[in-house]
Length: 129
Image (cartoon, rainbow, N blue to C red; front, side, top):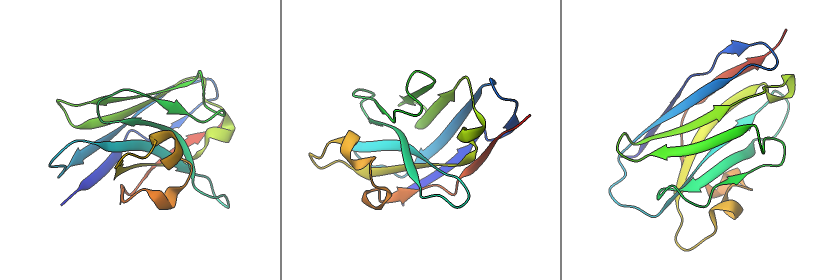
């Protein structure tokens, strides 16, 4: 049974940094697309960043490019998201998600939350002065 669990959410000042972690268990093979989504109150869930479980071919939404970094620590089975230069508009609940890629582009899968099969429960990030 696949389980995802996020941690690391917090309340920080604009310009600050956070590192989110997603502990993953239950994956019995490789070939997964993994990513981070976020959802602000009153907004749709949007894909933020993604990569394949081999750690390559990262993708970032334009809104976070240059500020956020995604990586997968295979030995730990933990997906990370480092967020720098945080802005008030980054305030949201952040979710990690995964799906078996099956030949599909991870950068395409991250465009629609409905294409991801496995989800964590989310961790809240608040950017406010």
